[in-house]
Length: 110
Length: 115
Image (cartoon, rainbow over all chains, first blue to last red; front, side, top):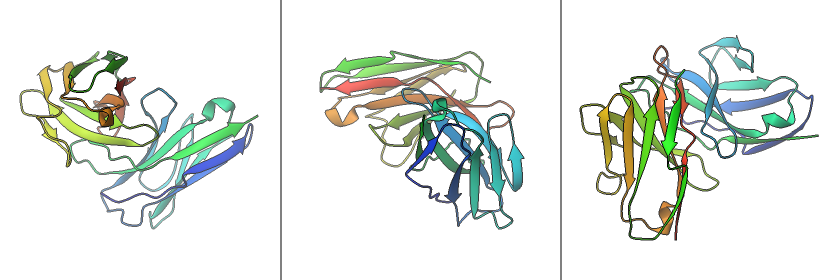
């Protein structure tokens, strides 16, 4: 599975757009890019998944360039409740298991 | 989606003892996963529990230390055996979405402190 690299931490203010970039240089053709969110004292929660170009849902957008060696999770107009750790995973259908990297700890301030 | 519950939610145990953690899912699933999250760290996969077969352990985890049961398609247990303070962690179970196996749902976790 491709290794992922993302910033350890980020700070933001309420109402701002936050972009978290993840590098996955060794991504394979069959790999998908998946992002999870984890609040303190809770299990991770699926946010979004994509293969190429752009994916958008009610929570976030995911931008994936043509070479797929990186991806950017975009959170529009963050609020204090978006303070969490965000994990970028490169996922191949290997029996469904997920391999988590370090994650990015996002802190949203008032 | 799937709703997952875990018992106990937290526990404080003495070294040398064992604790069994239960994971209950509200629907039948073939695969269940057990993870460990040490303080301030990311999640590490312990094993995959398939109903009707032995669990598959990841590198660094062994059955003697973390025996797993999977008696049916909605339930699994993980036992942390002969505990030491290094076993203090949050233990989480998860199951894949029925339609999209790349997506997983996680339980709330069991917070374990070993003294």
